[in-house]
Every structure is written in structure tokens, then in C-alpha cells.
Image (cartoon, rainbow, N blue to C red; front, top):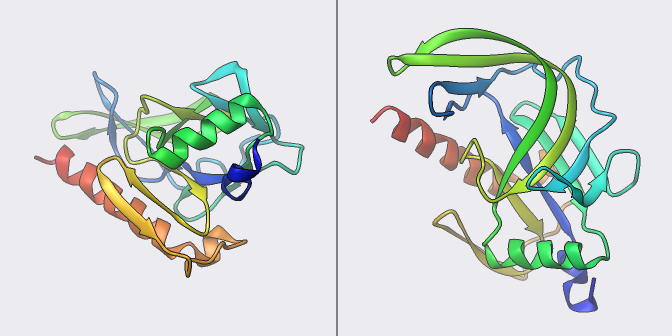
Length: 196
């Protein structure tokens, strides 16, 4: 990656947000807290659009951290110094690429109803295989962002502006209150739209 993008090479976000229903077409789906308590997270790759040929990072290297927390499944990754890594960083910086998905196997679920339709609640998974930066997410409330001291971007119609006084934090779960506010607003928007 070129030197001009070196300060924009770290990305982070939530491919999974707990208790946020999203429309799968013939049913709604949501992920329950505790879903990852017994999951195998040792094989996770960071991909573009679930394509194994578009590999950005992987667990087992210093470039990818994945951690379940009270909000969902959090990740943080360093983009590779490759053409794909630079392209991905530019798409994130411009606000073109903003959302996430995940791949898994071994589902434990239960069914309920939501808005008169079936609601699938995923309560546990056996293995998480990938986190993907995607064009079309199943859950529109997901959000991926570049970590940077200075940038302005538009995320899914929401303007987020940061200045030179914005710190670059080392611990998301302790300090990224501004991103939590963005995703809380997203979750409220999706919930409101689902109930209209």
C-alpha cells in the first residue's frame, strides 16, 4: 500500500450485531447474545464478498483480531500491502464500501414470529469461517470503517465527520463511543423500518 494510505490501513467493525432483526426475504433473522460462546473462531479469514480468492487477512497472524463482546462480533484488521488492500482502503475511505457479512457452519437456532412472519434466532454456531466486506449485506445495520485521525465519509446516507483532534484508539470496546453511537442509530433505524 502506498505511503499516502498508510494511516488508513486499519479497519474495524461488527459483522454481527445481537438482537437486530433483518429481512432474509421469506423470514426475518437475528443473532442472539452468547451465539459465539462455544464457537471455533480459529479459522476466520477476512475476505471481500465471501470470495476466498480475495483474501485480506486471517486469524493466526497479527493482522486480524476477532472478539465477541456485548454488542456482537467485533473485528479489527490491518489491510495488506497489496493491490487488493489498497483498493479496499480506498473504497472504505470514499464511503463506497461500508458493510459486512459473515460465513459460518453448525447452526443452533429457534423460531419465533416478528411482524407476522417467521423469525429465525441463531443461538449458537459451531465455526465462523469468514468475515467479509460486502456490497450487499444481509443485515444493513452492519458497519465497517477505517481507523484514521482525519477523514470525512458518508456511511449508508449518514455523514460522519472527524477532525484532527479525533484520537486513534487502541481498544475499540473501551473508547470507540462514536462508532457505537453510529451503530446504535443504525440498529434503531432498521428496527423502526421493520415495524412500519
